[in-house]
Image (cartoon, rainbow, N blue to C red; front, side, top):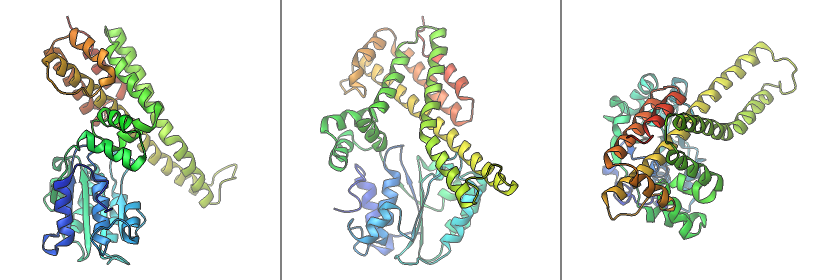
Amino acid sequence: MTVWDDVVGQEPAVGVLAHAVADPTAMTHAWLLTGPPGSGRSNAARAFAAALQCPRGGCGVCHECTTALAGTHPDVTLVATEGVFIRVDTARPLVELAARAPSQGRWRVVVVEDADRLNDSSGNVLLKAIEEPAARTVWVLCAPSAQDVLVTLRSRCRSVPLRVPPVEAVAELLARRDGIDPTTALVAARAAQSHVGIARRLARDADARARRNRVLELAGGIRGVGDAVLAAGELVETSQAEARARTDEKDAAERAALLHTLGAENAATLPPTVRAQVRQLEEEQKRRATRSQRDVLDRAMVDLLSLYRDVLVVQFGAGVELVNSEHEALVRGLAADSTAEQTLRRMDAVGVARTRLAGNVAPLLAVEAMAVALRPQG
């Protein structure tokens, strides 16, 4: 067992990182791990942090490895935002932390899991610390691609690209680590397009599978503008409900904890100073809910792209396996009712909708425009 066991299908990247751990001449102070969603960027970053702390280079069983992987090592800081951006008030404490020597471990490691969410202000705050870190400090930034990171930051990092892991490798991980039936794991890994976290959720959560199936069925049921508008409304409502389900319980717990800390959990009327802190918390929770809904909608659109990819496979007669093999009848029906050119236009419409959502367009408007473009074209 080693810390790299759960970083599946990434042998070249693991080789680079493991070599840096073993050979001081290959080590550098700032790293940028890039790869598509689900490629395991965060897992690789945690494994790298654990290997740096481990006296044996990542054995996976010692105290340093287990605490680093779990996120509880005192010299490994993991930063992930639940908002749309990483804000300046999150970045500033990292600069102060990075200037300190490690308290127990061999290195102080700061992992920024969403470096693509650093904006100009927060990125500039980190710039000096990443450019000239303390002697035993290592920064590990994670992002979908180098282009998603501010150029001033990425130019100061050593880039390590990750790839989409093979479906079979993801299925093997689910079976080995989570005890999931191999057949179920393979279907989930294929449906998730090798995204490890989503594959795990699909394999273990019947509701998640039902929501995904419904998204694909909505696309197949669009025959005109009226159907498109109704489908868009249902998709947005579903995403809002799922986002609320993810955040409501956490929101309530955070509010209760704040009021308890301030000694106001049973107060009929909150004092002005307490009200200000509660408002600040509510603003943060609102930003988190916005991001959660965007993430849910974006994932639904990725599922739609996988559907139209399968339609193209059938239309071109390519001898490759379908991503949505359990929806083969729907795929073949759409293939028979359209041309490859129309399928490509539909995929373009989904891509445009994703871009609009990322640009903060109202979700319903973006999804309605997409849904109208998915209807059959005469």
